[in-house]
Amino acid sequence: MMKKLIAVLLLLGCGPVQAALLTAYFDFTIEVLDETDAFVTKYGLADGLIVNGQAVYSDATLTGIGDELIIFETPDAFSIQIGTLSLNASDDVDFGSGFAPGVRYFDGEFQEFEFFYEETIGSTTYGVGLFEEFEIGEDNIDDPVVIHTGLINVSIVPLPAAVWLFGTGLIGLIGVARRKKS
Image 1 (spheres, one colour):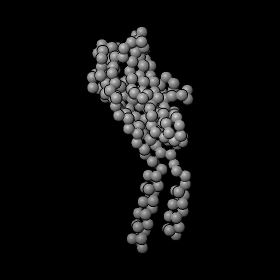
Image 2: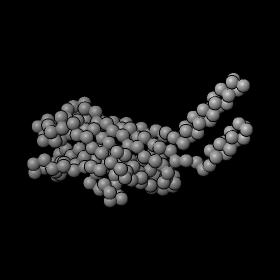
Image 3: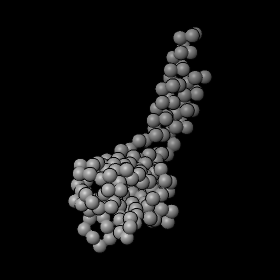
Image 4: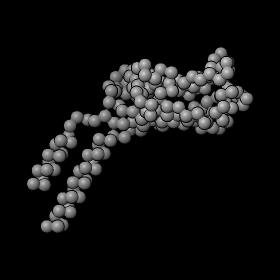
């Protein structure tokens, strides 16, 4: 009976390949050029500060062919910390539009994030962008902060495979325990 149960479970688990959950971590180091700038002082930016964040998304829609964009549809799919400023996907100026924020792939390879946030302090509008590079800047003025290229690391977490591995291991332990009782 136990052998038939294991065979059925293994056959059920051999369906089509499941999408993987991807997590992209990133961090950048900043250099402040104007310590008196309103954005710099409001959010406590300083030389050497590390800006970091992450995005969690599924690769279910990726075909691996050409230019592809995965849109972050929930606020918690993306987060970034810049000094005391915390942003998530819903802070993007295009959130909910179907254009951004998101992550771009080309022929199956990670290319860039697409995220842009705007804030007006006094009469100056600041933009925070994460594309091929991370940027903080003012409209028509020299940027108050220089961003030193950081690391973007995309890791794959194949959740369905992990679940099946755990499940078959658990079934094996149950079988061993039943044999010891007999």
